[in-house]
Image (cartoon, rainbow, N blue to C red):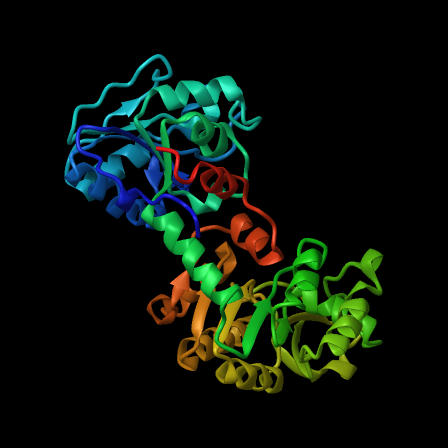
Length: 393
């Protein structure tokens, strides 16, 4: 990749502005999960140790743009970041006209979505951010698919724009998995709706050797195969689309194993009994909530044979224990496979955490939407700007 890296630069006495993804869950003024904050610490610490004055910026939630809202303030994030760094991290609310930090100092800019023009990638706003720094570091892969003032415009106008360690590692891992995979390459795509991932499934057919579908997405494949769904979640308006994917997969020689048994319930709740049925035996009142043990065993074999595995989206309603055995089986198969594995998406990461398997995965992606768009083959706007700026110092 022709992208300038932060590690390539001498940051001594430089003003460094780092775009991180610190969009973490906050409740009653307290951070509920600090995973993204912890992930940002090595980059911030590296810049500080290199002798830079560091400004960190991020969004949090979806406030009304241009309006301050205490509910979405980064104050709790600044507190937790300070604890992790072992120093106070001031939160700067008014910073566009200047935010001075001396070498070895760090401050956090208040939620960038409080400023009008952020989402529109406003050029003038980008220039103001660029004026705050000598070096801009894009380190938030989770926002790289958005062309916004703090991901795109600032990179266009900064004296130097580069990729931070988190962003670069993510791009390297995805490139390794998609551009230079160890074969066979297996992709597991789950989730509730096929409409949100239809183009991804179509794109993956030109890249993978095996495509496994799960969750509500799989129900549309069962529908197009003429199998009963009962009251299961599916998208009737997309009838026929899954069949086209199966037809295309057959022509390309891509294996798409279909469920042979499922776990049904009467409702998505802990009180609903789990019943294993053949796919042909789903009743009118049944709701498909997981893959069955035979299907889990089938998927396991494909995963264990793979040299590279991509996973996004659970294959069942794993939040309820009796409907989580299929997703757990997929998690454990990936962990045991020995393949180079990349997992992305909030639900998939929650499943890994539930089954305590995070440390068995080769690379855990920090971005949901960006991860999916990369799989789809789209150009990520923030990355495109860095590529265009490569070599300009």
